Image 1 (cartoon, helix red, strand yellow):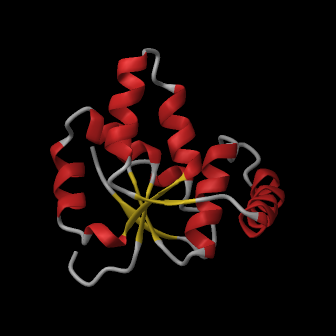
Image 2: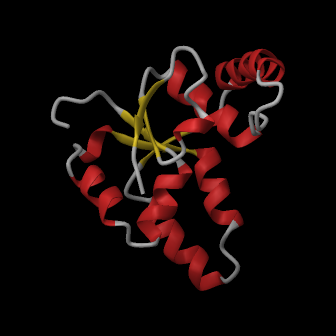
Length: 135
């Protein structure tokens, strides 16, 4: 994975790391730490799963090692475009979920590779570069 472009880490990968998934750890260890980011949506998704103060503090300490991207008007506009386009085109498929839509907007606008265990949540989106990981 040497010479990869900057990577946005999906929530699924962060959860796998918390669960001590060796594949996720190996992939992230192979990357330059300065090129690995999460977005504020991922932070919110992780915090939503923390039901104790101790767990929340552990999660925040863990997430502090990643660069963090913040929402802005461009991200919101891109997410709205994606939702308009793909919520209709995916009739008969699981809907494009709001957190995935926002994560995709970050990846597309920042021209980052998206590391995810859930390729099916993103692979239909034009302009997104996915590094799919298997469990």
